[in-house]
Length: 625
Ligand SMILES: Cc1ncc(C[n+]2csc(CCOP(=O)(O)OP(=O)(O)O)c2C)c(N)n1
Ligand SMILES: CC(=O)[C@@H](O)[C@H](O)COP(=O)(O)O
Ligand SMILES: [Mg+2]
Image (cartoon, rainbow, N blue to C red; front, side):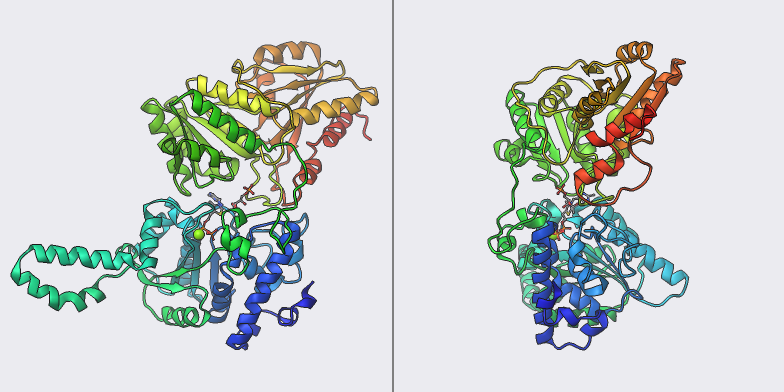
C-alpha cells in the first residue's frame, strides 16, 4: 500500500524529517493525509481529528526530539499522523483491527506513545507528572502536552493548569489545538472565549471597554486615552485567562503554516516558565467531506473515499437510535423530562431531542462529573433529568453518582449507552465495568433491556420511579423487534423465556437473546436449558431466584460485563446469604483488559455470543465439545 507514496514509502523515521525542505514536507503532509484516508476508508476510525494535525505533528517531530522529549497527546484519536511518522507506517493498515495497532495511544505499542490515552483531558496532568519527574531525576528534555479545545472544557484540564501554574516548571509547553470543534461544535464559555481570541475580537472588545471607562472618567483621562492606545495594544494579552493562571500565552498561530509553526515552537522553547501555545487548525483538513462535515467525520465506519459515502449494510436500528426516539416521545408526554449529555450528542442519539426541545437539552461539554451533579440539582428542584453517558465515560463521575445522586435518593435516570464490549475502540472504551460499579451503590436500580421494546419500557419505568435508576444498553444494532408504546415493568422482576430442566441460564441485557439462541442449539444436542431474562441486576428477583434454587442444581450467569463483582457475583452473594449451595458458572468478560477488534468477534472470544454460551453450558455440564 505504501508503494504509491513517493516520499512515505522510503521514510525511515523522525530523523528524516529534519533533512527535508519545505516543499518535500508539504508533499509528505499530503501523502500522510492520503494514507489516513486510504486506511480508514477500509477500517473506519477517527478521520477528521488526525487530518487536522498533520502539520502540527511534523513540526513537533522536527523541533523536538522524542522520545527524549516527551509529547503527550490528549485522547489520542488525532494521533494517526503521529503513528505513521514515528514508527508505525507499516502497521498502519491494521489500525483498529483485532491483533493490529490501536486507534489510540499505548505505551506498549511504541516508545513514542509517552502516555496511554483514549479518555479526554488527561494530557496536561500526565505531562506535568513527566516534567516534575524529569526535574527530580535531573533528566534532559522538554515536555509537551497537545490538547484539543474540546478536551480543554473538562475540569481535569483546569485542575492540571492550576497545579502547573503553581509549580511553574520550565521546558513545559501546552499546545492548545483549537479547531472550534469537540465532536459536535464546541460549547461553553471557554469555547466562546477561545473563538473570540482567534477572531481577534477579544482584544478589540477589551480595548474598547478600557477606552470607554477612561472616557467616562473625563477630560484628563481622555488625554491619557490617546497616550495609552499603543500601550494598551501591548498590555492586553488575548490569552489573559492563561496568563493569570501562570502560563506564558503565545498565539494564536495557524497550525497549517508549517514555517511559522516551527519558528514559533523554536521561540517557545527558549521561554522561561510554562507556556500555552494556542494553535488554530481545521478539523478534517484536506479531505472535502470531512472539512465540510467534521461532526460526521469525527469517527466513521468504512466508506468510499472518492464520494465519502458510507458502506452501509442493512441492519436493525441501533440501540442508540431506539433510545433517541423513545426519549423524544417520553419528553412529549412529560414536560419535566430534561436531557444532559457530556459532549456526546450525536453518539448518544440526541440530535432529534436537541432540535425538538432546545430548552430542555444540555450539552455541558466534556464534563462528566459536572453533568451528574447538575442532574442532581435539577432533580432536587423537581425536574426529571435523564443523564446520558457512555458507560466508559460514566466512570469519570463515580463519586458524583454516589455522593450527589444515590446518597440523596435523587430521581435521576442514567441512560448508559455503549455498555459491554464496544469493538474497535478497545479497552479504553469497553463499557464492561458499570454493572460492577453501580450494583454496589445503595439505592441504585440497575437494569438492562433484552431488546428494543424493553429499552423503551425500562426508560418509562425509570421516569416513573422516584429514585436513582440506571439503564444500560450496548453499541450497535439491536435485534429488530417491533416497538410500540411504553409499559411499566415492576422493579426487580425477571421473566422466564425458555423452559428446561437440565440447568438454568440467567442472562442480562444483550446476552439474553444470545442465551435463547444457545438454548435452541443445545436442545439439538439433547440439553434442555431454562433461560431467564434477568433484566434487573439490582434489585434482583429474589422470589424467582429462590424458586429456581429449589428446581435447579446448575446455574449459568451471562453478562457483557466483567465477571468480577458483576451480575453473576450478585447471584453468588444472594446464594451465600441464603445458605444455598448450588453450582454457579459465571460467563462474562474475564478479569483482563479486552483488546480492540470486531465487536462480535470479541463477544465470541470471551464466550458471551450464542456459540460461546453454548460452549460454556456444555462445558459446565461436563460435555465439552
Ligand atoms: C472523558 C471523555 N469524554 C468523552 C470522550 C469522547 N470524545 C472523544 S473525542 C471528543 C471531542 C474532543 O474534542 P477536541 O479535544 O477538541 O479534539 P478534536 O476532535 O477537535 O481534535 C470527545 C467528546 C472521551 N474520549 N473522553
Ligand atoms: C474518541 C472517542 O472517545 C469517541 O470519538 C469514540 O470513539 C466514539 O465512539 P462511538 O463510535 O461508539 O460513538
Ligand atoms: Mg477540537
